[in-house]
Length: 211
Ligand code: 1PZ
Image 1 (cartoon, rainbow, N blue to C red):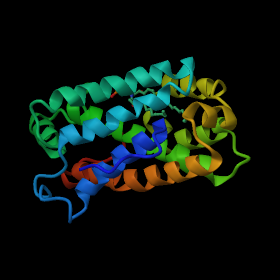
Image 2 (cartoon, rainbow, N blue to C red; image 1 turned 60 degrees about the vertical axis):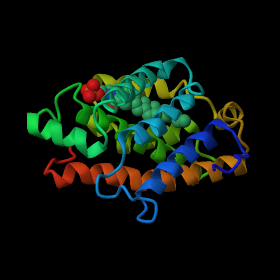
Image 3 (cartoon, rainbow, N blue to C red; image 1 turned 180 degrees about the vertical axis):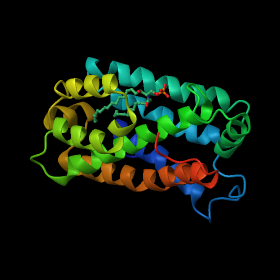
Image 4 (spheres, helix red, strand yellow; image 1 turned 45 degrees about the vertical axis):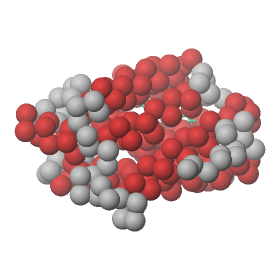
């Protein structure tokens, strides 16, 4: 049975979803190790991220729609494919790994979104003086900008000016300085092995991660 969950803020829900997912990758928890991570379990965790967008305001509606549509495609795929590696294997066979709209491409995009959130949290916790705008700008420049078109990058950097302040964000997330730090660190910890696992799926198939 699942233990009662005490601190039910949006951030703790996301964090716990990714901790549960990361547990599946640990040798002890994974009888399924050989087949790899289940796609439905992965999608379930990814779906929880959507609550974060409601804290960001209208300028990030586009990012939300992009992210949600990619996750939705993977949810559809999970009706036919059991694991993450199944979708990659099929796209490798059809030579559609990088084809716009393919499951393997959408998986790569969702992975970049998860890594972006991790990087934003990391920046956010670096110092109290850091505005959310500066934290998010640095994280985006590092993690996602290299893979986005000029038009998208320009829109994202413009949107950064509309982000809430640190205090507004904490208020909207229903967190304190202490609780937000704990939850962000836990997400950073839990997402790392998942992101690495996804990268490995591509690398093992000789697909470079420069896109
Ligand atoms: C709490 C912290 C707030 C910081 C907010 C920073 C948000 C940055 C938003 C980045 C938006 C990128 C939008 C567009 C990306 C598209 O170019 C690609 C197209 O993929 P293609 O169709 O060519 O294969 N789409 C994506 O990469 C989908 C996923 C992007 C969204 C990631 C958002 C992460 C979450 C941010 C925090 C809530």
